Length: 401
Image (cartoon, rainbow, N blue to C red; front, side):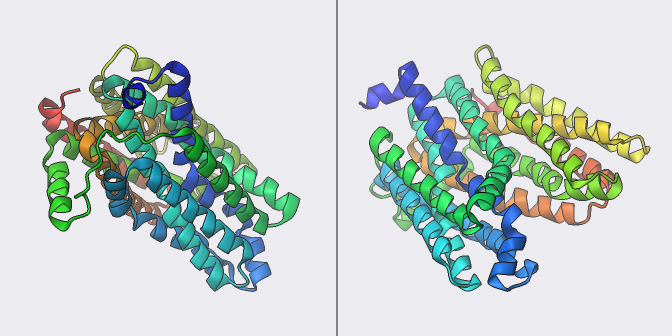
């Protein structure tokens, strides 16, 4: 069975990649489905809209904390068992939210739900590393990340449909159903993929040694830095785009939604393109080209904004290119990060996710708070893109695949 998993047949490989891709969507569904319902939830629970926004902020807090533990747990006990526990916790959180009588209980349920949601992306990456390596690992990550990019694109619309049919609580009922369906899918279709469990993974000494092994691996260290910094540009765009397009350029909500959807769609298409390129080129070769493209894209955004040449059309094209670059950077850098660390793939995946949230998301949000127009985003994204390219250039000789 283990040898079959390492070199899956085509149907098995597609099913495995599809499952990992859906698992990557868990957090996007749980956050983005909420967005259209916040006002209705505040009115029903008789609290302010500011107060009810905690269903999003507390979710991210609960989502970040388990990253340093869940991956290590899977190194010790196996991917399958921790995934089943994580999906069970995700379902429990949805059930608590579904039946919550007040905001306090609802927020507690959201934290529980977030802890379970973290298991999806962390362990799906580790599962793919268990089963694939090299160029094929990067290709399978690209295919799985198609679902990752679909999540933010579809989740708000799904939330609106569910809420219109059965009220805002039905959103949590939907998420509960998703958790049960995924639990059954993992239980019935996913065998254990880890080649050898590490019974000492949670021991303080072993944990420290493995963490040191991760940090001291030159290839992994470079890729962790690239991934974390790339998230700065993504998050700053996501948070500031409504203010830029609707505030500075006067787009209506409907027009902005269309522009946002078009830009988001580019990430979906980019993963197909990346998977195709990986048939012919190594991940580090593609990454080299994409990082140069990223610098050019961000530089054009800065120049257009600085000289007052930016328009809705040019910004849409710039942000589309930025998201294409981010999507391809994420897939190839993740593969290169996990490649030399198969024995501790769970820990590596968890630490990677933690850095994304703590460094990329926090700094991206800070930049977006002070971005009144596209000039600030153009300047910050250019500096970040240049920094990433320099880091990759300096570490290039240590990247083996």
